Amino acid sequence: MAALVRISSVCNRGVSPLLFRSSFLIRPLALQKKDRDCPYLISANIHATPSNYAGSGSKAASLHWTGERILSVALLGLAPIAYCYPGPAVDYSLAAALTLHGHWGLGQVVTDYVHGDFKIKMANAGLFLLSTVTFAGLCYFNYHDVGICKAVALLWSK
Image 1 (cartoon, helix red, strand yellow):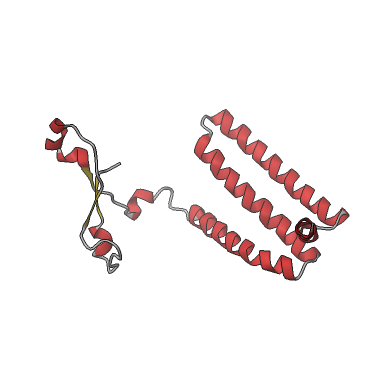
Image 2 (tube, one colour; image 1 turned 60 degrees about the vertical axis):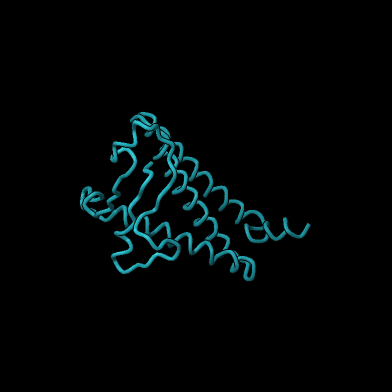
């Protein structure tokens, strides 16, 4: 990590810093005396230009990220609705939203921590199986038992 990070690029684009009034953010760094002569060891420029992220030109990753955020906000809205208006529509909506949210989250864990073609394929297959079983189990619970909303209410009541 860099010891000296220039944040003037953020400041010069119309965003004024709230906590820092200078253009440099200085972090302490333990260096040996001989390394202090090399400025490239203690400072770095961080560039976040769109050209660094331009891959295949598709917007699939951007749409996926937007979908994840929409689902997260929808889950925040479903929590009070489930408390105030429990019913089958809310139960099945929670089952679908929770399963999709968990699937996407665990998919990111697989992407970050599983390496090797065969291992990735097996991990993704296991993830799809887990997500399918989770959704089927929640739907079974909603249809044959009290449902997610009333089950949480029963847990809180005792």
